Image (cartoon, rainbow, N blue to C red; front, side):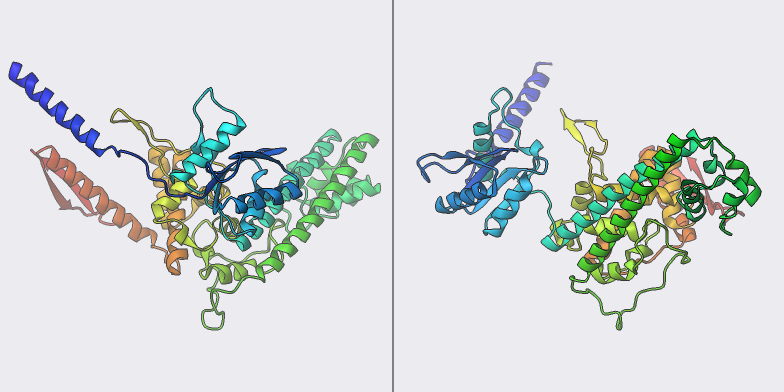
Amino acid sequence: MKSTNSASSERARKSARAVKSAKPDSLEQINLNAAGLDVGATEIYTCVPQGRDEHSVRVFATFTADLQQLTDWLANCGITTVAMESTGVYWIPIFQILEARGFDVVLVNAHQVKNVPGRKTDVLDCQWIQQLHTFGLLQASFRPENSICVLRSFVRQREMLLHYRASHIQHIQKALEQMNLKLNNVLSDVTGVTGLRIIRDIIAGVRDPEQLAKHRDWRCGKSQAEIAKSLCGDYRVEHVFALQQAVELYDVYTEKLQACDLQIEQHFATFSPQVDLNEQPLPPPKRRPCSPQKNQPKGDLRRVLYQLAGVDLTQVDGLDVLSVQVILSEIGTDMSKWKTVKHFTSWLGLCPHNDKTGGKIKRVRTRKTDNRANLAFRLAAATLHHSKSALGNFYRRMRSKLGAPKAVVATAHRLARIVYHMLKYRVAFTAVPPEQENVQYRQRALKQLQRKAQQLGATLVLERTATATTSPTEATSEG
């Protein structure tokens, strides 16, 4: 027993010596001309290295003239690179001004620059950011090139307009319910062709249900008699007034949405096409073309996105033109920003975020994120529920094993890998037939069974069965 304890003590000492020798003696200063900024709504605290000025920390107001003075002071101090936190939207003006003056601006996540608890002031924060940036301990957040940033702002503005317009659709539905007009029971969308015709006539003063039901579009699933029955209600003045204002606001946001789509189309024209349509024409649509939805722009957005990306991302199952527009506006087309596809999916928040301590993994969930590209991929994955494709089979298989939420994340992860590969290598999407994907899955499952049998000291014997189409092999184990 004594020899055993001495042997384990010797191993512990060797391990301790190994860990101690691996620790560096001191950190190397990488960015000698680095400055740190603590950005606020009214003041910006700025820290430069000691000896560059009489006062190494100065505070500036956030007016444009004061921001110009800040950049002049940094230039006089010999600063070449500046680090700041991504605080709300307050960082955007100073970031753009510094970048225009030629500074290397590093925008970092606030979680990466947390100071020592109990010692938080604006002065200490800017000094801490400057110190971390000097030693190269800060990682810059991803920010696409300026043209993509402009496109991203337009697309986010479009998303905000859709969100506000949806609120007024709910106000329309509320006013109809208050008058006991059951249009929601007979129409799938009260702001469709039939619904808006009826609602505008109600606002104009028409009350006859039969007369209103004549606005039924031929594509409507309900009959004219059913629609007329749903329009027998209590047309009170206050509810009609609320309905009128909701429709007017809905029209305003629809008009602004069309103007935003026009601005996006004009900005797309400023990009250099990645492909020549004469040499590489646009592939035929994978899905049967249908009438454009009311939320889709009127132009040929699919062709524009194909010229921007160099590949047709709408060929991927689950991705349509609007989701591709959101994804490209958030990530751009240059995949060299991420070293590997694993870095890309980690940035998206579509891979496990392991918290490991004491040699044990305490948490493996994906990290919380408000990344809009993450949401676009997850929405695309959710649409594969009934898809008769290899990706649809993958989603259903993951859902049966992990549940719907984790299946959506796993399928979104696979979609992200496909998009990364297409954009990086400029290759078209080649769909794997569902039958071939099923065969490959069975082969992988059998290999896993063989490895498991070997670990247990058993032998796996594969036998061909008669029902080869559904189950090509059966496995039995022998000890």
